[in-house]
Image (cartoon, rainbow, N blue to C red):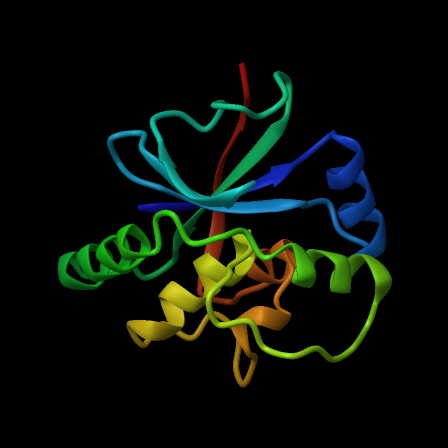
Length: 157
């Protein structure tokens, strides 16, 4: 299991990248079989390719855990992510990143991409970044985790 960080090219992706001063606009889980779980408009979904509904030519960096997850932790993360399928996309938080609004009411029923990935790790005891709440994490912060390393770069088709 790896984490996919996208360098999106759509107008909203470019805006997120600009506002967060980052190369990345999107985060997702990539299973060994190629399945992807991501918080993507309008809800958390399971697809069978990194490219599905993403702009062709989008650069995607794949990160692996420096110390590989145990089979149990990887399975727990995938199960947790699967339980979120259908959860509405958290447009409010994405707007918060764009507007740089520092606080907001917590919407427990909604998720955005990096919140899903970061939160799943947190829930199984993998602390990607110390003392950080998942709903505050843009995709770029995941790449900064000392627990991860870039393993491969691919391009969507």
